[in-house]
Amino acid sequence: MEFTMSGRHEVRITADDVGKRVSVRSLTDPGERAGRLTDTVGVLTSWTHGVVQITRRDGETVRIPATRLVAAKVVPPTPARRRGLPAAGYRELALVAARGWPAVESERLGDWTLRASGGFTRRANSVLPLGDPGLPLDAALDHVTAWYARRGLPAYLQVATGAEGTDEALAAALDERGWRREVSAEVRIAGLAPVADVAQEMHAGRTATGQGAEATVVLSRTVDAGWLARYRRSREAPPEVASVLGGGPSVWFAAVPGEGAPAAVGRCVVDGRWAGFAAVEVDPARRREGLASAVMAALARRALAEGASAAYLQVESDNEPALALYERLGFAAHHRYHHYRHGHHDPASRG
Image (cartoon, rainbow, N blue to C red; front, side):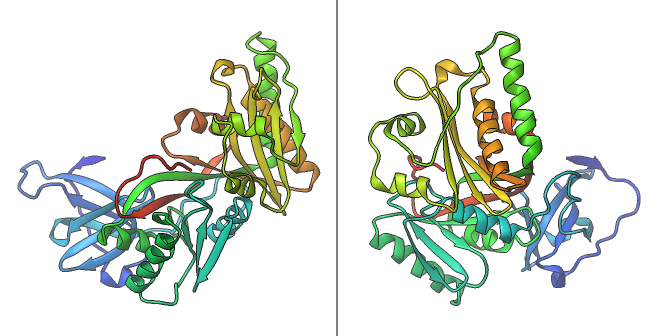
């Protein structure tokens, strides 16, 4: 957002504030007579050689010559939590999500966890960095790339931004070293009981207006070929798929029967107070019938029965239909994560 220069401004940050969340106003072009300004909010990740580097909530890194700063100040680490949402720290959510989508193989490198699952989803084939790797960063990255190369896999790091305790500094460091973001996702949270209620109301609304029939949702502890055919749109799946999907503390699979493959599927894993939702997919010919909300309602009620009270999910930032659905269900953004890859871009891998 741009502003016209007016009033009195003051720069109240220094290089000693690296690592803190800041709000900065700077000149877009000091040669312009109009003196247009732009605001940047994020974590101050470096201040070297007269250049201020800020990594924003969305993971983008902005570099501003210090001579262009007009006003700047340190701001609270995260915005106020929305009323009604479960209290949750980044580390807690990251560990819960990792347990809910477990890799086939993992290895520790200090506070980093290297994960591999035959290439099935980036989440199960990336490093989860939750602190110090125990080596200088460049040596740690060399170890990571070699580890994945031995498995015939590209090296990915899953780096989070946008909440207290996330690692904007690592995101900026990877960017400087030529690692590139391939995909970003939002982690969203909600109260579980409201999700169950709203999802049921949404489905009932569809049936009441004739846009869909009352859906029968079948819950199972195991995943079968039909469920996989709808989820992967293929009847062929390597063994790593079933291992990742079936892993987790208490896993439930939902399916709405259809012609051949199910008309809709979904997955939920219950881990203490948390219920994690994933893999909600609907037959393209059956969309807008309320099937996704029926699946969410059934899984949420099952999780409530097991004692869960909070919900989370992960959705790619460019998946607008899913984001719209989850917004209606009451899920609010908590933080984002980004998969940084060493080497060339590979658009084939998702998730």
